Every structure is written in structure tokens, then in C-alpha cells.
Amino acid sequence: MASVTLQNLTKSYAGGMLRAVNGVSIDVEDGEFLVLVGPSGCGKSTALRMIAGLEEITDGAVWIGDDFVNDVHPKDRDIAMVFQSYALYPHMSVYDNIAFPLQMAKLPKVEVDKRVHEAARILELEAYLKRRPGQLSGGQRQRVAMGRAIVRKPAVFLMDEPLSNLDAKLRVQMRAEIASLQHRLGVTTVYVTHDQVEAMTMGHRVALLKDGVLQQVDTPTNIYNKPRNTFVAAFIGSPTMNMYWAMLEGQGDALGLRLGSHVFHLPQSTSSSHSGLSRYAGKQIIVGIRPEDVADAATMSQPEAVNCITAQVDLVEALGSDIIVHLGIDAKAAEIRSSDSLDEIKSDESKSRCVARFTAKSNVRLGQMVTVLVDTERMHFFDGETGEAIHA
Image 1 (cartoon, helix red, strand yellow):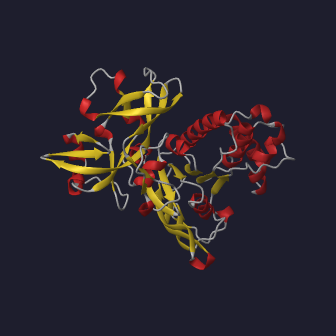
Image 2 (cartoon, helix red, strand yellow; image 1 turned 180 degrees about the vertical axis):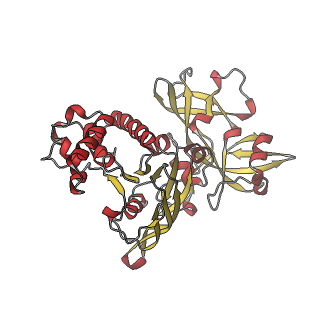
Image 3 (tube, helix red, strand yellow; image 1 turned 120 degrees about the vertical axis):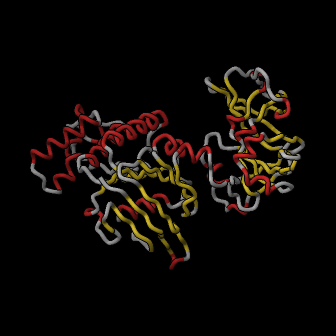
């Protein structure tokens, strides 16, 4: 096993005019499962290919364990890569596809057979070893691709969107299997996806990229609860975080937040955990509210009237265990788009959409006016000019 270290990793095109990866530095610990996530074109696959040696490095360094590998050939980097397309040989049996890298390395036939059957047992492919890829389902083909990586017993697994060709149900199953397999094998893994649900459920840590720049790298819990900026906050979470322009007002020793025509009284705990907020009194900031922090007041035993607002129900999506409700509220939306820079956050003068996650106890109906309770203790606050989170 080995760690992976990226130091100021950069990839430029067009004579340096375009930077697909821009100064990315990450330390992946031995045995860690790190997920690189971000929108299409953010540079995550390019970074992975530079680790693999399939893409030339413009600047910076890649270390695998104690070895500097910038100029090391891919086959000599002690890595195994799993691709989106599976990259299986259609004319070969499952056995031969899994055995191929071992045969190329000229391992003894007995050792090859032992490793293939061991991988097939782990991946539940023993009954399919004589079949060809065309006779398998998508999930089974993905397992074969995983088997071919496992038998090499590499120091590092590199996976480039391996589940994107599968249907939704199979993706859920396979992501659980891959995470479990990585845990059992303990192999350092760098996994690329554009799906933030995959990132949050599979990775020990998540690294979020935008326009080739690393925005934040942290545990799934921290990246969800303590996003570093508006881009991270908007990208991570489903449904996405609601964001609005708001005015911070000083109220004696307390702080108030004017959102549209309503003023929320922020609890002392919020002022304590966000000590930097006091500097923004009298200024416009961006406030973020997760859908699960907006509740139907009718389902609460004693809702705090001061933190309630009235909104119109525009859309109801019943999911069984909960209900996604789209509301129209009196506020200015702050639109955070994956392709926009932070200084292009725009506001809308009209009523804005608020997405809430109600419990199944709610009886809301399309078109009705409903009173909702906003959990002010779980609000997120961002600088209105830079988009950076306001904490200390």
C-alpha cells in the first residue's frame, strides 16, 4: 500500500492560456478512499490521469509512497485503473480478462489461477468465469473490470467514473460494493465522480474542484456542515442549499437577519459559533438554508413564531419517507452556478424559490399558503462579495 501526494499539480493547454488543473495540492493517506468531485470540465479526470501517468504534468509533482513518479511510465507506477467504459476484451472470457495483466507480467500459471479465483470469489463472479463480457449485465461487467484491477495487488486504485454507465438502482448497489471492497482490501483509492451523492456516501474524504482549482477537501460530514464557500455549499447536498441575500442587523447584544420583509432573531449560539458575523452588521450577506432545516410548522408541537414565515406552495414531490416542497417566499435569491465565478452571484428582485424537506406527517397541498419554521441555528453565512464562509 502507499500514500499519494499531489504538490501544486498543474495542467495547462494552449501555451499556458488554459489551465485544466491549477495548483492542486492533496495528501492522500495510505489506505484512504479519496473522492475527487465537481461539475463536468472541472479538471478531476485530468488530475486522475496525471496520477496514472496518462497525462503529461505541466507543473507540480506526484508522489506515490516515497517515489517521485512524474517521469515514471504508467506500468511502473504500481497502480490499477478502472475506467468508465470497463475496457474489457469482448473476445476473451471473464477469466482471461481478469488474468490478462498477470499474464502480461509473465506470472506463473498457478499464481495466475490462484489470484483470478480469489478475485472472482470476492466479487461473486465464480459462476461467470467462462462467459464473455457480452453475456454479462452492466454490473457484472463492472465487477470484471474491478477484478482485473484487484488481481494486480497494486499500491493504489484509480477509478474514473466507473458507475456512470449503470442505471440508478445498480449504481446504488455498486457504490456500496466498491466502498465495502476498498475497506476490506485497504488499498489507497482515488475515485472520480460528478455525482455528489457518490462522493458523500463512498469517500473517507471529499475533494471538490471548480475550474481546475481545489475548493475544499474534508470529510463528507464537514464539507456538508461547514462548506468553505457558496460554491461548495450549493454543489454538496440534494436538494441543493437555498441561498438568499440578507441584511444583518445589530439588535443590542444580539443579531437579526432581515430576509425580505421578515426579520429572524439569531440565537446566541449562532453568534458564538460565527463570531465573525458581528463585523457584517449593517451589511448585505448571503444566507444559506438547507431544505431539511425548513419545517412545516403545523407538524411541530411548539413552533417558535419569531422564526416562522408564510409561503405559497408551488410544487409538492411526495417521496414516501418525506416530502420535497417548493415554496415561493419573500426574499432575493442568490444564484450560485457551477460555471460562475464567485463575483457573479446574482440576485432576483421577485419572490424566490425555497425548497424544503418536510416529514411525511405534513399535509401540504399545491397552491395553499403554509407557515414554515426555519432553523436559525443551522443557517450558513457567506460574505456577499467573495462568497467565502463567515465563521470566526
